[in-house]
Length: 348
Ligand SMILES: C[S@@+](CC[C@H](N)C(=O)[O-])C[C@H]1O[C@@H](n2cnc3c(N)ncnc32)[C@H](O)[C@@H]1O
Image: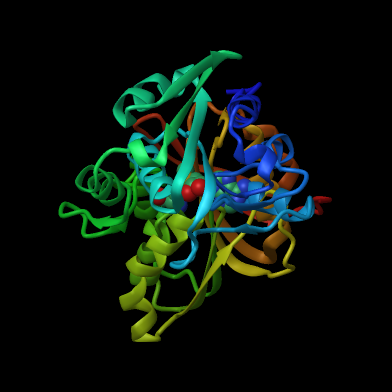
């Protein structure tokens, strides 16, 4: 979804509210720099909440007060803006959270592209007004006319982390493969040798499946760093690896990182990654290429790295530039599993 209409829609809807002129406090859930720029009141204050590290970093760089999540006592906002995303449960939970954090007499404004089903949320929330433009829709909801507490509590519960009986893992809607084990990840985990030792990294760790398998399978590992951009997924990973952390056999660190841009200088003996090919806007194989290059920079000269990707994704050239040894060690269910080594000098 390029040309995201959300910022323009939120700004237009916000401009119809008196709070825009009164310089009131505005909360923005799933804020981006574009939204903050379009909606920031000249004489007011914005609190931007953004769990996705690349967007969070851009907000901070622009001097906007940003947090990965809400604090328990954040409340009393005159207006709460919600940028709708792809997960229905996460969207409903955000709308309910926005209502809970708004002062009596306040307003909730939500917007997103038509393909995200913004009209459906407007109907469910009983929107006071809606606006359709720029191939998207915004709706305004008076806090005092919001759905009742029971409905809002159900929406919040629906968006929060829970344990999945079939696998035993914890994750919340919106995270990658939140309610299952991804077939590509399972394939990669099954291909990992038990002799991996030393210090390892899981790039794009999600709710922690690969790291948990590494810790269970490789007794020679001293340390695993989980790098993940989604703060909510990282919280789930913390819960999923709690027992491993408590056992203290392997040191585990959870790093809220933009792998594509982050440079913390750490080096590893082993790296695993189920390469992402989506950012928050949609499919983009450039993210996978950025991960391959980041893996080459972070791997020690004699280290080994295991990757899984959708078979059709064109990573061979990037792999050849980043590693002198590239071997396809598995292929099934539309995925390819690669073992790579001998990292090249990749500028970044
Ligand atoms: C294909 S998923 C794999 C998740 C997990 N390793 C698993 O096997 O279930 C890729 C992960 O990379 C994360 N990701 C995407 N872009 C990222 C970035 N720039 N920096 C860090 N993590 C990112 C996604 O949030 C997602 O959790």
